Every structure is written in structure tokens, then in C-alpha cells.
Length: 456
Picture 1 (cartoon, rainbow, N blue to C red):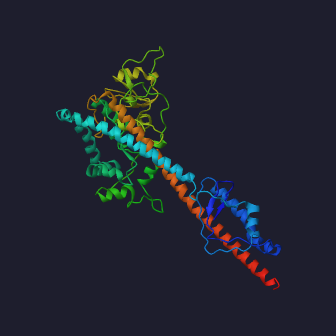
Picture 2: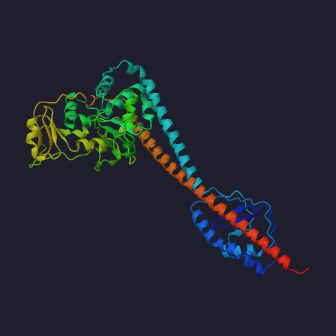
């Protein structure tokens, strides 16, 4: 048995299969074996440089290898210090890559346990409050189903296809490769307390934006549509193929919003606000007063499910500071059109009034009668009756699930690197074994030649 020393790292075992190392220093033999031995330096350097990040235990079996001269091994040792006999444990230590992978798995398991414990606590609350909830009004549920029905009514739209798929297959629809990155439709991702305000906000955005598909990443956007070699849209794959499979044919263009590419709000949030409203500066008239009739900013008037308030994107952001901030920006809401017009010096990103006035942007007014938009934000169903720590627990669960997703991504990258290193290492190991075998052959030939020249 012998050790291999690579670039000064901890030596690892090489099994030479009961190799017998003996012989004499012979100048003629050394010259004949010099050619394969010169390869040791470059091979050892290349192998050691590659293996420095990750150390593997190496066991090489070369059965029936007999080397009759020690000068070859002496030269290998002098030039490269690659073979060093030791009496240590053969197993060696964990490779660095496997250690990192083990740590990531432990972290994932710990997060799974914590998430499960908190979900159990929430489950206890739901089970204890179920009898009371049975007697409550279900108009909130009806208001959430109403926009889905209107969206499905747009038969040739991408939103209609996705909502129909969700209605038929429930949560299973989210597990498809095509739809797993789709967060939802704009009209389904927020609620508004007032039905009139909901209609105004929907009219301000327009039907195309209300039916826009929202994806978390650009990979999800690419999965929705593929193209032929001539650049035309493939009708047999992506969302087009999915629509055909359920009896819907997607026609025309449709908007898709990619959250990871949106400009994010970089300010502060309102302190201790459960809906994490953005802390925006109120408009001020030249005299320093807030305009009469100012009710607030539209971006803060949309209620968002707790599940989408935080850790929706890979950076940990929620829908308010990404999606709705990009849709509404600093859109102001006023009680009346008269109040809105008096506040014109303070309006920079548009405004709406509860009596139907709309200013798209500075200098762009929307006049005429209201449009009859059937797709609008659902109405919120009153204040929540959950305990004070309920939302905090939900928030912690979402944060841990977000961390778990990041850990899984790290594990995938680590495993890919580890697999690549194993493949490269096996190639280097085979080259090294081949070198040892060639050295043994040259040594044997040199010894045989010397024996023939030796007079008897």
C-alpha cells in the first residue's frame, strides 16, 4: 500500500496490489524510463490544481504489478513527491463538496421541521374556529369567484385559459412545468374595500393589464410561448398548445409581467402595518398643505393576501413593492373631480376621483363616460378576525419557505459542480493509473535488458 500526496494536501491511499519494490540504481535503466517519468510532473501539477477545491479518497487497483527497480519510484518521489508511504486510516475525510451538500441538506431539513411546527399551530387555530366560521356570511367567497368567472368568459385570452385550467384541476394545475412559475392574473392578486374604487382602478389599468399573466421569473415567461424556425409562434406548445388541449384557442397578443425584471420600490414601509403599505410622501400644495379631498395612494388601497406580501421574488420582495408599485406608482385618489383638478400642481403620476375622473399622467386626461369593464378587483370581505400573532406566524412561514427555495437552488448548483468534479477526477485518475502502468512496463523491460547484458 502507498499514499499519494497531491499539491501538499492530506495524503490519500493508493493500493498498488501487493507491488514488490526492489532493485538497483542503474543509469542505463533510468535513461530508458526517463520518458514516461517526465510526464509525472505535468500530470501531478494538473491533477493537484484540479483537486485542490475538493479532496476525494483515491484507491487505485493495479493487480499483479511488479516493479523490480527502485530508481523509477525514487525519481517520481524526487520530482513530484507524489508517492509517500504512511500508516493512516484509508477512508480519509469527507470531500469538501460533500460536506457542503450535507450542510445544505441539514439546513433544509431544519427549515422543513420549523415550517411544519408553525403550520400545525395554524391548523389548530383553523380547527378551533371552524364552527364559528360556518355561521358567517360567505359573500367574500362569492366576490372572489366572480372575477374568475368573468376572466374565463374571455375565451380566447391567456388569462381565461389559465383560470379555466385552475377551476378544473385546482392546485394540480400549478404543478405543470408550463404554469409552475405563474403567480396568477393581475385581477386576482389584489382586493379592494370599495366596489366603486375597484371599478375605477380596473378602468385606469385597462382590460389588457387586468388580464395580464404574472410570472415570478423570466424562465416562466419563456415557458409560455415557443417559436418555429421562421420566428412564428408555435401553436402546438406553450400556452397555445395548452389552450388547444382544453378546447380553447388563444388568439392575439397577451401581456405577461415578469416580477424579477420590475423596478422595485426602495423606500420604507408604514411602521407596524400588517398590509406593509408603502411609506410615500403625501402631496403638498405650494402653501404646504395637503390637497383637499386627498384619500391616499392607489398602491396602498389594494389589499394583498398575506402569502403574497413578502418573499414572492428571489430577492424577498412582495407584490406591493413590485407588481402594484409598477402598475400604480404614485397614483393619487381624490374624493371628487373638483378636488383632483385643484390638486393638479401636486400630481405627477396620475390621479383618479371617486366620481369617475381619471388623469393618466401629467397632462393626459381621460374624458367621457365610464367604460363598462367586467373584470375588476374582487371586493375585500371585511376585517380579519384572526389572533394578533396569526399574521406574524404566516409571515415567518413564508420567509422560511423562501429560504428553503434558496437552499434548494444552492443544493442543485452544488450537486452539479460535484458531479462535474467527479467526472473530471475519474479522468485524471485513469490517466495517473495509466502512467503507473507504463512506468512499470518500462521498468520491467529495462530490468530484462540489463539481465540479458549481465554475463553469467
